[in-house]
Image 1: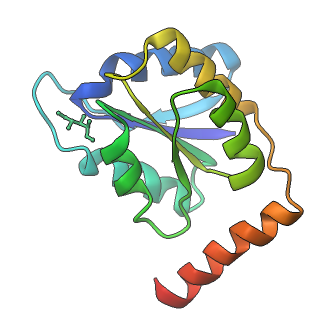
Image 2: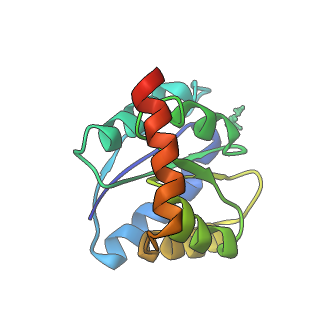
Length: 148
Ligand code: RB5
């Protein structure tokens, strides 16, 4: 698995925490930044990460900002991206099983590094269940194919 990861200035600490998790798990990754001491704009990081996943260069993306909301909105504008904003372990598990999400967003001003790490590990290890869920995800893909 190859993971693209990025954050704005509001998500730098959790991004570093998740990078250390990826290294511990032996998962290949690319850090898309930010290298930010100052304020930056979350779409400048969300869209490159989302495009890297949508283009097939990376299997999954992880995005962190203050709330995770801006990152998730921006990532979900990219065709083929199913980004979930997750702040609990149950949702991390089920969004892989049911939604086949390929990007995870979290908010550093909402949760701490320990929970973020557990969420990311759960999400990375989660498996899509397919079946009726594949039918539902397929309807989203069909909409994208017609309209995007
Ligand atoms: C930055 O101040 C903040 O707006 C951003 O990190 C994020 O929370 C946006 O959704």
